[in-house]
Length: 278
Image 1 (cartoon, rainbow, N blue to C red):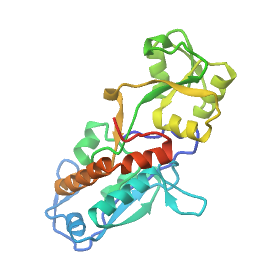
Image 2 (cartoon, rainbow, N blue to C red; image 1 turned 135 degrees about the horizontal axis):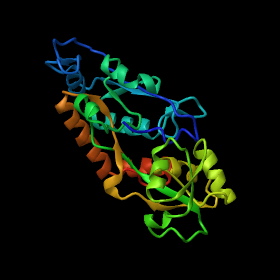
Image 3 (tube, rainbow, N blue to C red; image 1 turned 30 degrees about the horizontal axis):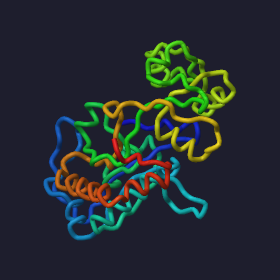
């Protein structure tokens, strides 16, 4: 699972999900995961009958899931989930929880699914959870001064100074392209060094950078390079494995949101450009 790249600009947090059963269905033990698998799906029944789905989210991770000035829960992931619920003809009840408890909440059936910029990137998690079709895509980008014309290819990073956290995968990526890493504590400090000319560029997550540029349009910085599509990671609604019919319904709803322009509109509202396309 990946996400945490916005943590330097705005404190990153955490979120979880779990199923609240209306009619408890019989279960069988899963020897590999130690969890239980329903022989019939209460979630599917609720969706088919226009019931309520319970969705875990942080509520403290802008612009994905947070509370606005009126104290209302909103954010890209939140509004996408509401749009999916509308397509399914169900109500949605968000369960706010910390990130570290997110998958535990899903395992314990506190909610049905998670909407919190979740990507399944490890074999263990892919074996245990399902992810509906992605509603956002992101990868590494190069952020540098608008006036700097040196960035015409990833190979052009060689020999330049990159402001990076030493423990981050972006620091490793900078070293891969033979840039000189200037150590920083996080994204906010990295951006300041680039603006001051003490570093040539910084590498970070595309969504984190788009959020920064939307908030600070006069920063004098711009995205110079974007990771190719096959290196991007998609985030989507995550649920416990075994509800294939539910995943199919979620995918149908997500495709409709692509087709009618809802995902593009929400992307541009929260990020200034379409992040729903790989």
